[in-house]
Amino acid sequence: MTLIGNPPETESRATQRPLRWHDFLTINAYWLGLNISSGAITPVLLPFLVAAFVPTAEKTTYLAGARVLGLAAAMLVQPLSGLLSDRNTSSWGRRRPFIATGAALNILVLGVIGAAPAFAGRAAFGLSAAYLVLVLGIVLQQASANWAQGALQALLPDAVPEGQRGLASGVKSVFELLPIFLVILIGPLVQAGRIWLVLGIVAGGLAVTAAINVRFVREEPLPVARKPAGGLREPVLRVLALTAIFVAATQGAVWLVRTGGHLLGAEASVALRVTAIGLAGLAAMAAAIFAGVFAGAWVGIGRGARAQTPFIWWVVNRLLFLAAVGSIQGFAQYYLGDVLHIANPVSMTTVLLAAVAAFLLPSALAGGYLADRVGRRRLVALAGLIAAAGTLALLLAHDLSGAIAGACLIGLGAGTFMATNWALGTDLAPREAAGKYLGISNLAGAGAGIVGAGIGGPLADSFNALQPGLGYRVVFAIYGGLFLLSVAVLRQVKQGIR
Image (tube, helix red, strand yellow):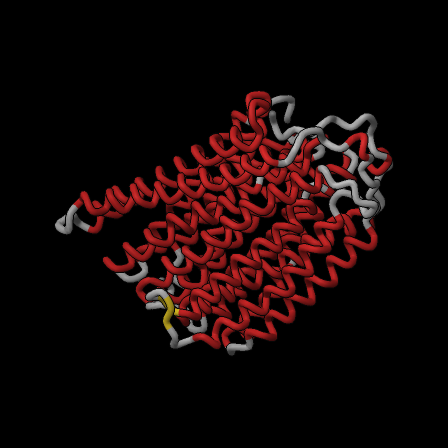
């Protein structure tokens, strides 16, 4: 048995009528709330709190550990949510009940993150108790956020006519990127230790946007006769196996890189270590992505995976790109402080992200518009090349202005990618099981952080021990390689796609 449900008997009325301008806003509203949360927590609040709770020389490894555990929860929950929402016959519709409950839980678990500093100075299980509470909060936050997101991302193929999906994806991308401007305010608040105020802003964003999405989106309830056939036991076991395979592949790659470093011996020069271990790190990230995606997709989809090879390669392309861009964002605060020696790196990280947003937003809108006219793959490839050039500029930077120049190029590439790549994925995902397939695409969302941070964090600390700041330059160079690989694999994303 596969996870693919029964095809619908007829097209829903929602997908037959052209959308009006406000429909694009309401369908995508909760993406704004989710990204207010992730934009405040991942690049700003989480690195700040981790650095306050753990030894300085190991902060990147501890940050990677927190992100890996949280994203493993995301990888598990999001496909389950998509799968269950595909089968949901609620009078609210298939997706909105999951969005409402996920938002409510997300708001509640923010309190666990806020409570972490109260445990500072205590130890548990040989670790900082504050760090452990923080990790617990991050895991719960990721689980609740992805309970909503697994259903939310299926709204677009459910409710948007095929000819308008590029524009709808562009609006989605704007809502994903717009919160970057908010972090200009968040950064100084975090630097001043006003954690509860920051979490209150996040909670408000989640509540308001979820209410808009739930109240104004029109969903037709799924008739019981069209509910996907089969039980849940096998699909749930597939999702559990999918998560275990991907995490195991990533952690195996970490072990291989560390083993390779030990084999070089203490007498090896810094240049040799950078070259050998850096290339091994790039190979390990790429191998973890290929092995994790293909094994995970075969487990998650079942025997039907053979017919969905273009979709699987799309997931690979997406993961390669997001692993690079997400990890650069996640380590930006430490890069500014430890490499460029910028004063107030927390606040300056928000300035850097705001500069990125100035290029992200117009490129996302333009990319979404052009995707319906000049072809998805061409723009996705261009996005990867631009982002790789931005990473090179970031590596060559000697001050904040140079870093901003590189980050703006990355932003231009990322904005184009976010709109056009998602439009490509919605074309490839079977409509009758869009929630399940786009949930499997969470291999790219959650898996990106697991690969990029999970392998990059320990690598950065290892090289930083040899030469302060060297580790971030090495892992950023690896991320540039991932951008280029994302372009190379596009040749496999075929099946009638331009």
